[in-house]
Amino acid sequence: MGSIRERRGLLFIDFRYRGVRCREYTKLSDKPANRKRLQTVVERVEAEILLGTFDYAAYFPNSDRVAQFKDHDARKEQVQSDTPTFSDFSDLWFSENEIGWKYSYQITLRSSLDKHVLPAFGAQPVSHIARADILAFRAKLAKIPRKDGSTGLSPARINTILVPLRLILSEAADRFDFESPYKNIKMLKVPKTKVQPFTLDEVQTLLTHVREDFRSYFTVRFYTGMRTGEVHGLKWKYIDFDRREILVRESLVAGKMTDTKTDSSTRDIPMSQPVFDALKEQQKRTGDTEWVFCNGEKKNLQINNVSNRVWKPLLRLLDLPYRRLYQTRHTAATLWLAAGENVLWVSQMLGHADPHVTLQKYAKYAPDLTRRDGSAFEALLAQKMGNQGQNDQQGENS
Image (cartoon, rainbow, N blue to C red; front, side):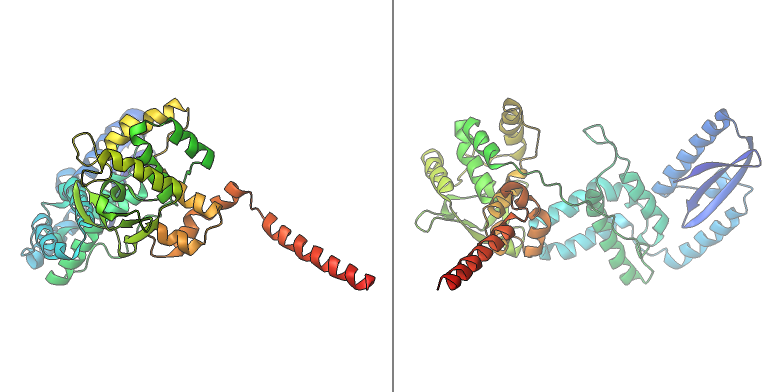
């Protein structure tokens, strides 16, 4: 990000262009009005650099940098003028690779490209994109206004947006023999997943007060840990009442049925008694349809409708802090662990490929829910010591 600095009472602009730090001095004295004037220039320069339209000579015609960048651009045009635009090459790259991607991954990549990456880089030849352009683009993403009034996309969202940019530039660099500008740009550090599970008492209160036509739906969500797409795409053919199992085989993503998120997500979830009873009750409502949970028109539920019309009003009614519906999955995990279930089993029920993921996300909540803060070990010692004492006493008596 460019800045305005002062040296010997005069202002100068400090910014980076094509990976080079540039300082352009002015004859303006260090006064608020002059700083404001230069700030407008800095913002315009940064915007044009990001869009790839910046002309150094137009802003600083007497600068020594003009010749430097002019020679650089001339050499670059001469050697790399035959490379396609980012937009054209991204279309080719996408068409070549989509056959190997799950539908959900295709949706994620396409959304990142269309909404963010192509507007910033689409018109530029792939070989003309510089490392500084990428860093400026990433910085801009961190300043985008959000619906809740805050500023900047989350680190996780920014990393997701940058994935297709990195992959496309890497492939283009291999094909057209230039060094990828994405080299050595690391992913942003992502904070740990914010887990805010409900207590068992809260779950029971929620299920007591929720709309009757959604009680079965929330019972399944709270007591199976299924993902939203898995629940909304659940079909009656995957309900095995005889074996008391829910077979997770498909998921609803962006209105389309597709495979589960990962291979490990394909799993069989045993029905607890509340889940069994809830599904039997739900069968009376939708048993003549394909879907276990659907709306009055026998179509798939939409997460926004469920959240806005059922979930949020329910939390307000019970005066509970707002939490995303996805916390039902986190709640199932923490309740299982609190009950003493094996971590490997819990991991399998959640569809995690690695039980270490389960431990990292949820293990710390189990002691809070069960008050197992070392007392279990103390009880074991007390029992052992008690048995030893009894044996010693019996030895003395004999």
